[in-house]
Length: 417
Image (cartoon, rainbow, N blue to C red; front, side):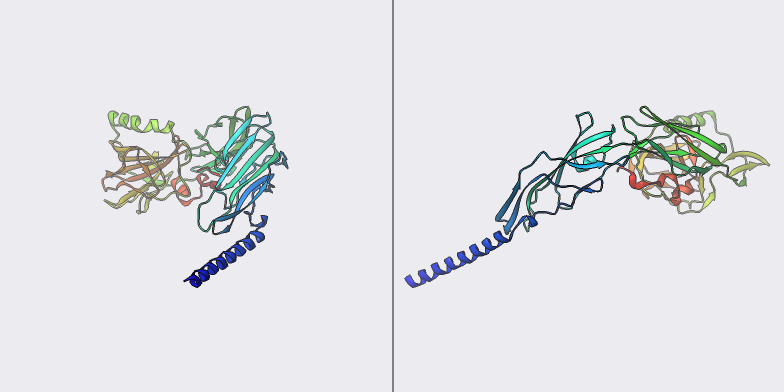
């Protein structure tokens, strides 16, 4: 019995020595190279830490080796970024990033996470000081290093205001995007133009708005004056007339005064309002699988006399077929009007709305949020299915928007979602 106990004790001691030697060897071989790789850049410049504290796992997350470098007051000089907004790029291992910016006047102008910084807008030119702490706080298995790196740097920005159009020339029916960059200061931009109302929304590096060029816009040059704070910029858009086709039409019964007033009260107020921000992404889709019976801008002729012009697309929608939401947005009207039949209006933000007229059945509800392709009602052979896209009260050609060849899709990678 004593021999057995002695043998067991020797085995335990041997295993303990073996494990201790293994842990010791791993501990000896573990160095600062086993800390997480930094790979963090700001404005394309690699940042250098000014202090860190890490616990690197040695043995299954039970034993750790610590590495520590006390934080210093050193500030890395990143230089002048000019009118380029410096972007922060982090390594994949970061689980928490805390950042603060001190502005040219010595006050803290930003304090938050790296994700918050993506929405930060510089409000003054000059030198900024940045403090950034990257942490890994992981309980995943196998065990990972735990700790932080600290970065401190200074840099200069010198933004120059600039206004850019998605195209300096447009044809009647187009939508032209207007991009404002290099603006410092608070406040949402405004645009003064005879083309229609422009709603701006923030994007990375500036502001974006959309200018409607409706079917009867006068050809020639149109000046657009953009104001933001104390900044005023001017750009010119040249509009070309488009030759629209004619279509012989039967005379229609004029709407009653009551029906016209009902329509005005329901629809016209929508021209002046808009959901904040941009709710769509990519091209729009046709609201019906039916073919187009009447194109945008088609001139109706009754007994050889002009009798109006199409402000949308008319679809040969099969009776009872689904009518789809052309894009994501919020339903701001859903009901039946004597003038337009079943009617659904979807607000896509930035003043852009889809108007669907002539539905036999409306299934969408006011206040509902819809995605692109959601069913909002049924078509009927009692009414034409008409699809209009308007920015404010100005109609534009839905075909260009459906094809994705529109200012509504201009530089979408800049959008803040």
